[in-house]
Image 1 (cartoon, rainbow, N blue to C red):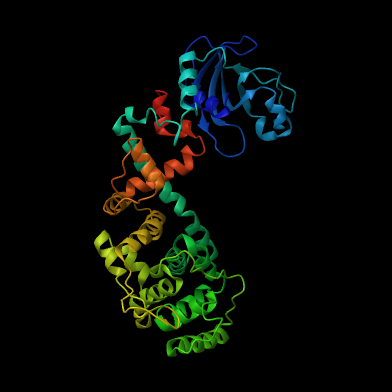
Image 2 (cartoon, rainbow, N blue to C red):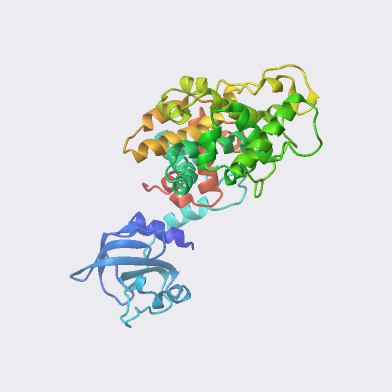
Length: 427
């Protein structure tokens, strides 16, 4: 028996409508299950329970065994004095509030249908499972249920991505331009150098960023210098020398320090993703667009968002990937594929949270943009395809990643609309 199943049974009323009694034989009926609490404190708030002829309003606590009340030290926690009903699978001990009044107990094991338990057991039976618990049954699902759930998951993932934006806004006194700068910088580093580029914020406060962001050469030199790219063996390239000289000037002027900054990696990266190229492209993006935040917030189509990112690395990088080593001449443009990743991971979360802070709803606009971006291609998406769940756009792939990482891998099937539907209940 799992405690989350007991939560599920209570929340979805998988109990008889009549005939319920406490372990002391008192007839009860559930008027309102209450509000599910996912934080500390009792499991359901403001429940309405009728016991005999008396209507009780208070909280409900759920455990596998009654004795778990004492295992969790609820008897000394005043938050649990308002519990009016203790719902358990097995009643193995009497439970009292801090004032020694006994809490009525409802034991579930006598009331739950065996067919329901068999379905639950089958859902979590890991025998022959290669990917997710429901892989044998998911093809039988109503497509409306799946599509509706995936759309909810897309917005859940979007909400999750705004958490770091909220933290940065709090630290920067709601400086949206600065927070966009830091988040774009982070995501220009992708997975390999994202943490490295993000760590640059320790040296670049909002005041410094506002002075540097529209001067491409100064910004490029500062980012290279702080990242440690201008250290090591001296390079005789005139561009390197100019950057190094400019960084020393900026370092003294703004008291810049490399302390706490993670040096970026080149290993295992394709040359177009080298930090030298990405930091240069990032710097030129800001030198081209003086009011980048307002431009990105204002655009409503994928085409216009992509157009903003049509910038190249500095001219030096036409013939280089690293300092001092020439390569075949080639403009280092930001590709649409790279831009789409930036839109997914930075721009859409920003647009979502900013407009939400203004009390506006642009869900349809966001859905239109993400639906026009090609689906991501990775092992998780491919595994869903094998069991009959296809990703037609980035909206689907983002939702499936949220589903897999936040539900499937954590066995949260009872909190998933697909798992709930397989047990023939509504979420």
